[in-house]
Image (cartoon, rainbow over all chains, first blue to last red; front, side):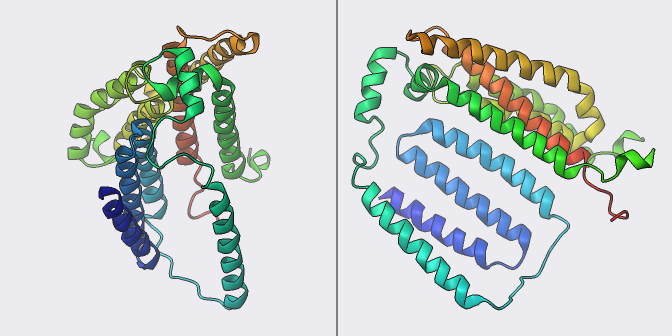
Length: 169
Length: 133
């Protein structure tokens, strides 16, 4: 029952984030959607994901507010609406059909332990299930995450550098 | 007072001075005790990065870079990457690794925290000047 209330809350604030003209207000509405997602994870018994969602939402809120605090651009309404709506509907139809076939295979909604992870969990014997599986079976995945962080830093350095720094001095 | 002009207002600076240690200690707690409680290396690392970003927003770039210089950040990131590679080797051999979970979480949290702080700092340092373009 609570999950439906939270989903309705999230849908209302997502619509508000799309429709509001002011950029700062839409950023705040977007962060309200993230907070609702955090509560949904708590209700579905996934506290690890809830903590991560809350923290990353805070970081994104700081970044977006610093990015949009000076700029308030009006909406651009060009032509080409026919092609855009057709492609949107095609994408939504393909996505929903894939979801229909994929969700049949998943276990029941809200169960924290699947069958395979239960088998892994018996072999590791650590209190926090998510961490046991992460460290014992997917540790190279963490290394790849960190490679993504390095690539992000290199991308920021490559995009934001001053053009023609050699010729200045 | 020259220092008051750099960052945000005096109220923000005072409250930052009070809360910055609590945020850092909470991040370290979440990343160290994540083998028994909910949490994890990634969330703890993002909280650690948020505490330094808090310093940077309140006091300005210079003071945050004085607390954490670039050499310290790069050396911490390299040490934690080496730790992660060393902990990932037993999975190839086929052994399960029960004692290494807190160590690996500390390594992941250091890596993620320093990386996010470095990305935020690069965004703050390299914004182009308004008048030039």
